[in-house]
Image 1: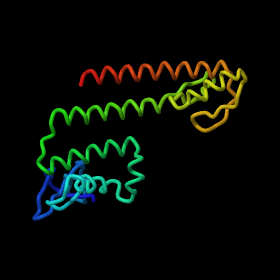
Image 2: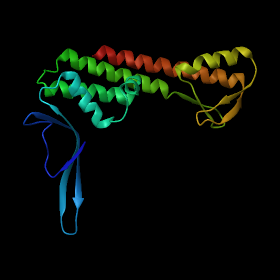
Image 3: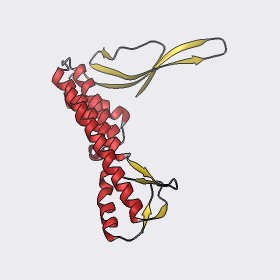
Length: 195
């Protein structure tokens, strides 16, 4: 649920037998005819003080993903997975659990993995005429098959238009995709070494 108040709230509040977790803090101003007020907006999850870790995680997740089924969320997008990790941290804090160095390292590893996956999914190549083709890892088998055929082919561009592509253009796009993926994986490996 969204909470809008005229004072800053703590991350964790206990109200009787209910624990409230206030997160995604956003400060803004609200103007009226003769007054300007500073306000705060939060996403607030509430659950019983006796809730288990899993129930607390679920309560936090439902504040942002209220109508999605567990199965749909489990298949999850990178955004959902990042949010799920944040929900786990908030739930553990609400239980008074220490977020250990190993736990935080694992959360950082997951974030680096999501960043790597997002970068791989965003890979493209621009032809000389400005047409843009996707060069993601899952596109490589199609490039290899088309190049092996040795025949120019209609190819679906990033914007879902169809463009006739030569085998030389497809080879250049595939080579670019390989180069980009290698750089992304190298950067990921370097950042993992720093953890």
